[in-house]
Length: 156
Length: 406
Image (cartoon, rainbow over all chains, first blue to last red; front, side, top):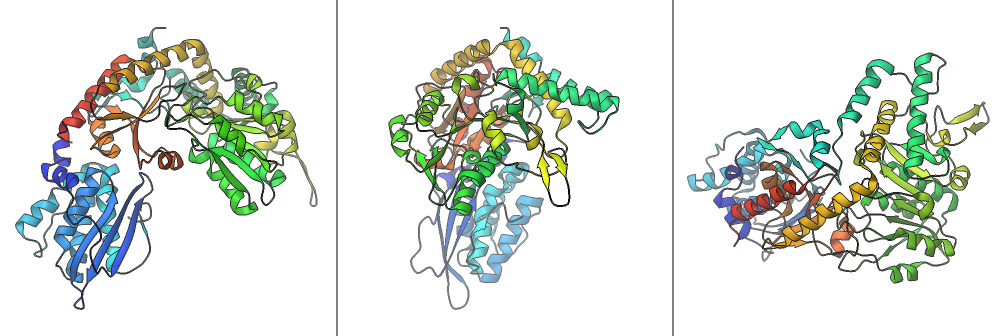
């Protein structure tokens, strides 16, 4: 294990300066996520247009560098994608941090793939996987309009 | 006291963690175990195992005697009046649940008040919350000041004619505050209110004398006192334990059973239903012997010196903030580093072999009061030394480096 693999510059930078932070104007979906083990909370705001495309995606919350960076990168990657593509990206991300699978989707460009893959080091730290996945599960909840709070202890 | 000698009694310290010598600073969570305790568990299972109190055969008689010997040791260790006042449970959490449930069933009515404090661990809040839900009881929180000390005057003001019980921690698992429980018990007893003390953190760090404190109930977890997991202790004054209804029903806690009537066993068996963690209780005797071989006075002095050394050293590191500054503090130091989340601190420290805890430490009320979502915590056991503190401080410097803090 190497700390540098976990705390890559890109993660530290996103952790310190998260993108798309705050409530977006005109959001029509939102969901809350909570990690009861550490008290981390995240709230995802989503604007889906008539074509079911993610027009806006922002978040609020507090957490560790991993969770903040993961959320920040997520908002960058998913913004502008269709509902289906968004869900596909989420699945690939979850597979990557849990099972170590590669990101293969054609829906992300090389730059975006590098960004999301910077989070793959989390797999080596089982106790930290939930820090990285909380906001992604919360995004799914918002996309599907489930209106239930995500609790990291109740999702895989 | 030769501290190196004590460390050598704990086999785990010969292991490497992430290639580094283990610096274990999570004893408030659970302590490591000396070889004598580990050996006793093994020898009991290998040579002496039997269930207790159920059979006439030799193994059972021996196991029953050894089980009782631990009860006697615990009685002496906390200076109880009688071994009937020592109930074995699973842990301090179960001890508190036992009292909340049985005392609540018998004495709490709608609108009655339970007084706890902002320092409490969830295990000394949630069991009382059940009574709020089931009985309509009211829970009041005695406030603390920014130093992490309970404001006794405010606690006194919260006592009313409706207050049925006061439940307080003896030692905070976040701020390390040593609570003046004797003073609080005096105040409560003047108004005929019983007091339960959560002694989970104090038992490994302070001399416990339930007679001197005059507390009505005292809860301890064996695994924090260098003992095996699965052993908890509930001390209760005999007059209370005799009066309270039993908690869990089953074998071993009855006197006579017929189709329409059941009578219960006398103390302490009345509260010990089903097969107990026999080997663990037997081995716990070795934990008490271990504590006594060091001497509580020596242990207290060693940990105080270590805590002062750590506090002085941590204060010199930029952006480290220690949580609370109580009048009397034991070896529990929670802290934050500006710009680094406690989870990140714990991960980076772990790479250096330093085990700390990060999160709210089961004290969300306290963290909310202090405007924190989480903190990192270094807590000492008797095996820690100044070298451990030096490694901790170096590892914290490494956190600052990883995060490029100025």
